[in-house]
Image (cartoon, rainbow, N blue to C red; front, side, top):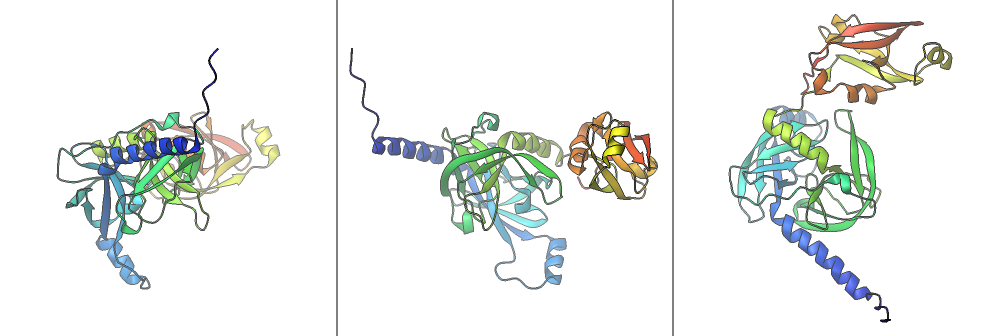
Length: 332
């Protein structure tokens, strides 16, 4: 019986780790770009009215090519309201880019540079990720081109609040260090496949960084390229999540003891036409329970635009079923 082979030495394991990181960087690094923006007219006016801040008046971030004809994926907060977008490729070329589409609700945007034949980054499957898996972040923190950090997937399925107030789900948490300028850059697995779009850190915490899962990014990017926006249904209300009296929830047979109280409604909105009143508490939409603002936003998808739906509302002690036809959100 042959003797068991000795376990690999520490230096062999470290060499294998280094080879995995360098191979991933060599595959994806040429696809990473630096993005510099100048504010548009509205944003520039807002900044002129605000107190002066130190530093440059523009902004910068990262992105990566994901098609050979010049489409670049990045964060919405990097390019939103930009008057001019300049992209520096890995070979040093500086090009002016155009905005193909922007979705602040998922903090994703697609821009395009006027060149073809560029190497696209291979997109992986974020659904196969596991906590503890090696990941590499590539970007341009503080303008330092193509900087690399490595770490692990700390957790899956996190939630973050976007700039619009909408909840972003299926967020990846990692301890691969991110800094200002990394936003929009790729999070890569050991095979050199993009599994996330780096988006945020929590300050002053260390090692708590977040990325948008690439499966979400694939869907959003496809919509932005085709239509320039993501369509979502809209009722035209402002609401707040409230706790219902337990007796009321039990009396009406509700699955949850929470709902959305209508604080205000916009004129000529679907809610106004449906005669939804301020003070109504929305507890359901087409048979699905609504236990808070996030539930309601999650249900108001593109498929509901222009289609009749039924709101279940509590008005005083009475439960009512209110027909409503959601429209496309004007914020899209």
